[in-house]
Length: 297
Image 1 (cartoon, rainbow, N blue to C red):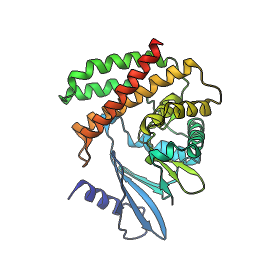
Image 2 (cartoon, rainbow, N blue to C red; image 1 turned 135 degrees about the horizontal axis):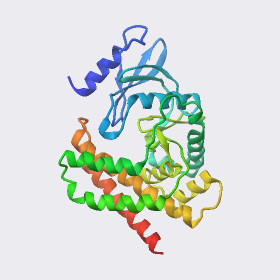
Image 3 (tube, one colour; image 1 turned 45 degrees about the vertical axis):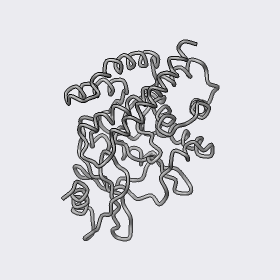
Image 4 (spheres, rainbow, N blue to C red; image 1 turned 30 degrees about the horizontal axis):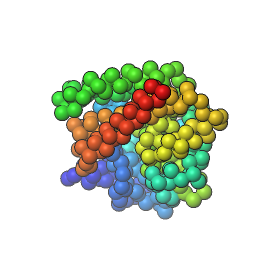
């Protein structure tokens, strides 16, 4: 039995169902298996997956964040949870694409949704408050790569040097409750409103990380990225904020690159991680060069 088949069987056995169900796999999901289940005339999304310490994913924290996000009106309602499984109301809509994110008609709506998530979710979050500090995540990834004798080891000294420079440039931050995985597919448009889903990496962070991830993961132009910053902070962009945002955007790309490097060692999913690593490493190098040029100006 494959990992996917095992996850579908696990989803079918959940105690929540009113009778026999036939889970159908959903596309996406690089840290868990997602499937669609119809039961009692309703549709649900089931997320199957355990803790992934190598990525800092703790499912109890994801569950707490998902509950809080639902109460804040940001995400669909969690209707059931068991160890290693979460059942969420299905949203009839479509996942966004990077092209959608770059569309001015979406950008303002997404930034407003982010602002609401950042400030409203803490009012509902229960339990120990997680922290997602990207620079510490990167440092921990270097230890994981060293322990796994990754073939990327020769570049880690340069990675850590860049990490220290970028962290210093970001400087003191405002803490908000971050999503920390701003991929287009984590945004759903139901025709009337937007939803933000998948809280695997949720935790307190600087708002610059979600804004940087939104820009870097979806190939926003410099003008679009700066427009997002102005919309979020509701003021003209200063040179200082531009510099700090550029540093965090570069850091978000480095974190995604190293996430993929670690996944090459630990993931059992069928996915071209080496190609993903190469893609994001190239993006990171360009972002770092742009930041360095800004520093020299």
